Length: 292
Ligand code: PAF
Image 1 (spheres, rainbow, N blue to C red):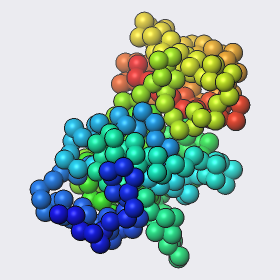
Image 2 (tube, rainbow, N blue to C red; image 1 turned 45 degrees about the vertical axis):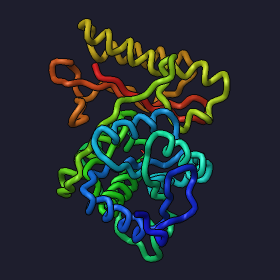
Image 3 (cartoon, rainbow, N blue to C red; image 1 turned 120 degrees about the vertical axis):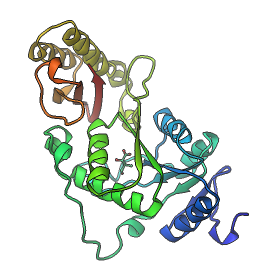
Image 4 (cartoon, rainbow, N blue to C red; image 1 turned 90 degrees about the vertical axis):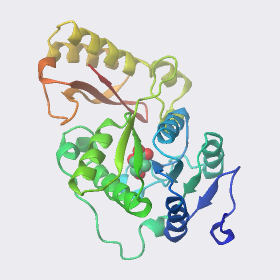
């Protein structure tokens, strides 16, 4: 039976809790009933990519909690924290219709109370020279908030999308290094029919940019194919960068890395290999990746 004291106004059929005490009470009741719990950490603005994380969570647990929190510490002062799309009620409805059970939507002061002074300093994949080169404080923010969410929820499994591939590697390292018992589940990238990876930031694209954006994935797909056929990695990457440039992108990086360590590799024989790209189209920065 649901404890009325834990209830807050809900959207659709899903309950929204705002503080850690209510979250823990709800999860403790589920655990007592023998339920396995999966966490889907998000920053909201849900799209079909997030729904695929919910599906993966369902395959790994009986109850699904989604955290919706736009985490300020993973944004640099120059980035889009203020403008980041926020749509809690609509998100909760989407989550409910995908079969989700509970939304955890804390206020900033709940996650970072007055006097907060402890940030994690992730190394290894967080220092691979990819996203971290362009967003030097980003993974400290991600690692800190993910660690907090894992401590608050103590889920059996937590689902992260392969779209943020470096983030996935950082989280896997974090969980191993700090002995979290949560199993990390990786969910494949969901794409539009034209290949563009789904992202909450795609809403920033103008109609013209949206038409050119799929070239990012096309460049990776062609590059991966060429490498598989034996073309030198350096040459294949050079062509891919040129192709992305002709679509109007300014490339931050387009690289071939070891899929697990993210170390630079220049031969598929040193793999498994993953291609990773970040590029700016107008004011929108897009990332993507593909296995070779
Ligand atoms: O991938 C995201 O949406 C965020 O980086 C995460 C994992 C929810 C942490 O804020």
